[in-house]
Amino acid sequence: MSQTVTMRLPEETAEWLKSSARRAGRSVSELGAALFDEARWISEFAEIEFRTFGGERHVCLTGSLRLWKIILTAIDYSMDIDKTARHFDLPKRRVEAAFNYYEVYPQEISAAINDVKSQTFSAIKRKLPQLELHKVNVNDECEKLSPC
Image 1 (cartoon, one colour):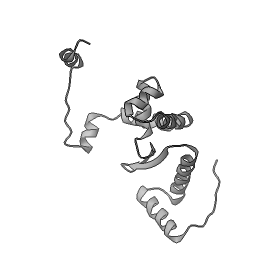
Image 2 (tube, rainbow, N blue to C red):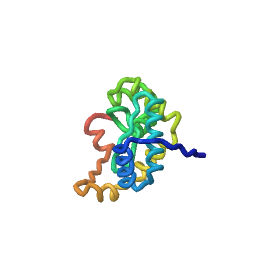
Image 3 (tube, one colour):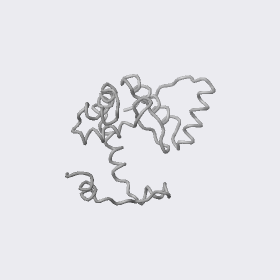
Image 4 (cartoon, helix red, strand yellow):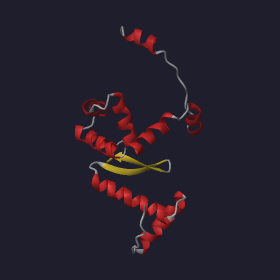
């Protein structure tokens, strides 16, 4: 359920909100509510910020990676904080911050991970025409380097 809340904004802020909503294809109410949610989450979780990538807002570690990238890697490490921190060369407390957010909002992060996993080479190539596909037989490469 939602509630209507009325507030006064400085004229410059109100114009920015209207313009931003128009560019995002959202109503002023939708964008305002989303921005308030982001501000709330930033105040409730250490090391969290929101940035725009490809026109979409993503939760990130402050000044660093999108959280879905950290959690996707952490899943490969069985959610081991130490291994994930070493992988990204991050202090353990920063990875813990990502885990804390994921613990409360797993659907948001899982949806982002599923979106990435569902992308095909063809779809990515449309966005990055210079992209080339290189296939490597891992077993052949592994044997050249050392016995696996």
